[in-house]
Image (cartoon, rainbow, N blue to C red; front, side):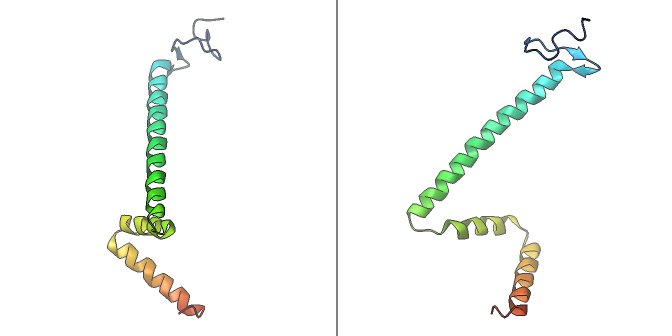
Length: 95
């Protein structure tokens, strides 16, 4: 086994440069991704709690989610979507 292949496939705990890949740099990227993924899950849990709280006080969560989505859109995109929805509703007689 060469120095370059030692530890491949094992959890040796040591980052190595293998085949032009910097083990240390790769591990740093993976650590950052994992940390942000955990933070993202924590935020998703917080958002879920807020929706549950709003629901408990009588708000319709489905409508709130739609409002959040609409507020993220720019005004022109939102207007186009609303016009298209109205057009489709009229086309199927859902006035």
